[in-house]
Image (cartoon, rainbow, N blue to C red; front, side, top):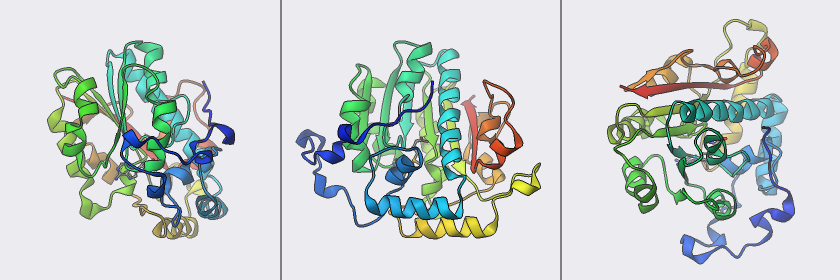
Length: 295
Ligand SMILES: C[S@@+](CC[C@H](N)C(=O)[O-])C[C@H]1O[C@@H](n2cnc3c(N)ncnc32)[C@H](O)[C@@H]1O
């Protein structure tokens, strides 16, 4: 199944009358700064972004043209890891930092294996919330929280989470391409630890994270420093800064979750379901990814 974004006429950006029951208004969608969710949507070919996002994203593409391949590889990793979790019997998913919906979304992938899977999505960007009703929570057994991963206990206490997730049963938590928006002083490891504390044994962490580290087996494909610094500069002016981490730091983020084979790897190398990824595919990917299980 390939990723699909949504045409402009279906975009809630075309209609700024947001549902009052979601507790925010269109005014809360900040168009004065580029937003990571809308920039990522643009990398994936989506329409749910503004001029200010496109300008910033175009600058990232200029200094680092592979960013679009990276975003697609990251979505493919998310889909394989969710499918794997559902195949292993997990029927509950918490997708934190879910992004502007891009089909197939987590509930669609999980339900291919586990038709009664329940999924709660969360994101701190109101633009994501505007889409949730039409594209994420239009199916029974799904929910959305406008919330912040840096406040995991508040997120976990949200009524949408409490009504759909049974914390006596294993849960797969997705932190896919989101913790690089959490600075060291905001304690990303503490976020994972707080989530782990709330989950029973057998629960999973599905995590991916951007890096500026060169890919060790293909020296010619390294993310060079000029590109890395150019990308970091663009995100300095966005609503959340980018915090690139190396593989060892990403491994540490798993905390109490025991890493599963093949460990933390460039996302195309995580249990590929097709031909072994080419060196070019790996070189083009700035994301590390892995899956851990709570013992
Ligand atoms: C690069 S997108 C990734 C989307 C999706 N998880 C994926 O990998 O395809 C990052 C998302 O994380 C969200 N995000 C960033 N910081 C966040 C925070 N502190 N709390 C919740 N969501 C956050 C952004 O709004 C954006 O939607």
